[in-house]
Length: 367
Ligand code: M6R
Image (tube, rainbow, N blue to C red):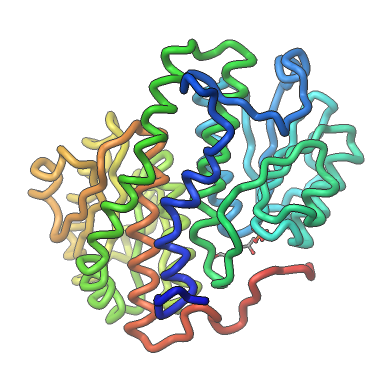
């Protein structure tokens, strides 16, 4: 059932183009100009009444929620807070009836996420769930449900569920924007056209798996490393770091690139790998100057960079991996894929049980 792949994780990484297509299928109008989410029962008036959004989740789903925050704020201009479920439920969050609470969970059974959902409902908020499992607890208890069509995910390390959650957030962000009137049809059409290209662009990244294997094998020789980025690149950096820790057992930290000077730079020493995600137009110069700071202290820098910027970034880094060009907001759906492959091959190089990392369970149904 691994379909010729050595591990479920690798199979699931390679299933992402299909998962993107399936998650978009039936949710875009025939003319390609608008998003149709028939599963959402909220009226346009109710959507216009949303004053704030809380996104609540654990682990990788939380990281998808970090991207979701930027997506919803950017597209629909509604303020969003993203929280880890085990923090949210105990911190007395300010939930009002005009708050939309979005819970994100691949399994739909994560104890803390489910408890956060119940807490939100108790305060009269409407709850929308993004989950991969039809009929799961989260799906049953939420008011509205967007099912990610990733198909069953077996490996403990989440890959295609995360990227399908991103697709769900893009669709939802556009849908909210259409209803509140923050974006015109031409803009929505442009984003949808760019989204349509994502599956084929992921295929192109997957074609370069060998290059990433080599990078991973050198990463696997280290016991410490950093991931840096700004904006959604930082959100992706956090997911890349979690993936690597979870299955390779190599310690890493993800940092907003601009925060390095405020303490972390003290840890940069000769030869330490720094993986930097640089996909956001307008932030290139800023992140490049952070790269120069770590390079000056001997770091070995790998940059994930948008096609077209190789030359400019290449001068300041040791290794470069190029990501097909897309809209800045969609970049996470591409830039996370090389990080998943680096984690996979690093785990393999260390001889770990890739699909079943020590101490972890696929679904965390206890608190
Ligand atoms: O099923 P869920 O999406 O609610 O699971 C949440 C986390 O336990 C999960 O994403 C975990 O962080 C993964 N093992 C990460 O790869």
